[in-house]
Image (cartoon, rainbow, N blue to C red; front, side, top):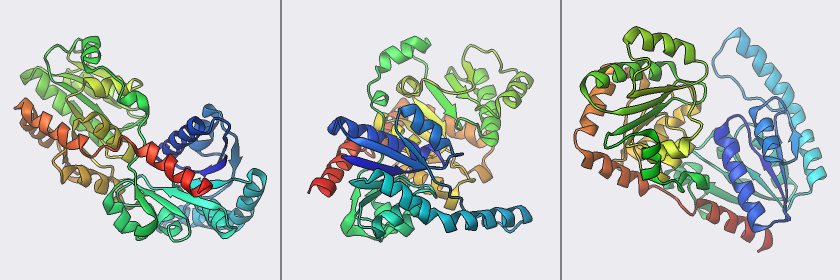
Amino acid sequence: MRVLFAAGGTAGHVNPALAIAQGIAVRWPGADIHFAGRQAGMERGLVQKAGYPFHPIEVRGFQRKPTPQNAVRNLQALWHLAFAPGAAQKILKAVQPDVVIGAGGYVSGPVLREAARRGYKTAIHEQNAWPGMTNRLLAKDVDVIFAPTASAVERLGYHAKTIVTGNPVRPEVTMQDRTAARRALGAGERPVLLSYGGSLGAMRLNQVVADLAEWHLAHRDFLHIHATGSIEKEDFAALAKEKGIAGRKNFVIREYIDDMPAMLAAADLVICRAGALTLAELAAVGRAAVLVPSPNVAENHQHHNAMEFAKVGAAKVLEESTLTGQLLIDTVDALTADPAVLQQMGQAAHRLDHPDALEKIIDAVARLVIG
């Protein structure tokens, strides 16, 4: 089994591809797995760390906002677009894959398009409830589509060849012992809040979390773990000092959550963005959430992801444009007033879980390649 993946741009595209690659390696131990992506993209580091051969191809997205800087970027994007088909052909000739799998990002466009045109078996994996532009354009050409939700199937428009699989979740997320995780934190019987805005951080989310911490340290007995993100670390430290919440026993400030499976196991309520993989993990462990979709993503797809949780009662969605510290305080106060509310929300989230997502994808790949 020889497999070529094309994915890039964000960890939300690359990590699902790596999960599928790992599943293929388990099913077919001798599988020869390759990745295509941008040399300067974050995908190169993730792929090489995982130990797979990496084939560079330069593709850039077009900027929609009309500015002089974006005009230059769009000219560069056109230049790279002109040469991308040739680069994709060279990669396909070098790898000679049995199947080519795209997991989103601009880089998957030319690779999957050339693969389909040349008769290779092809599949794409969409992570978001609102599919990305690249996958929407590729949907008509590929053999199989893996979708996260029924609503994504409707938006992709090719029902007959689309399988609702959900998003693969790393096994360690569901293998944690909640009692042990809470004991390690010294949580006792207190509700545990977990909040984060991604590895870089989210300024507005950090600001309102500081207001929330100031309130609950004075009025409620929570244990609260918050990750500031690397860019926002210093600003949050200054804000925490100003508000008198730095160094408090019940408010733990980190730069990054590097033990996320354990923290999710311990948490009662999670306050976070609405990336597809984040939500897949919340569903896998069945956690109530307050979701603040990032407004800085393509086609506002995090809003659509969040609404999938909101409409079944698994989360409260607060839009960043109207988010205030008091709104977050009121929301958390109401949700934590009755433990049964968080339990019901967690159960609703768990009903959105797709525990067999990876197995469904691997089985479909086997059918596609082997028949």
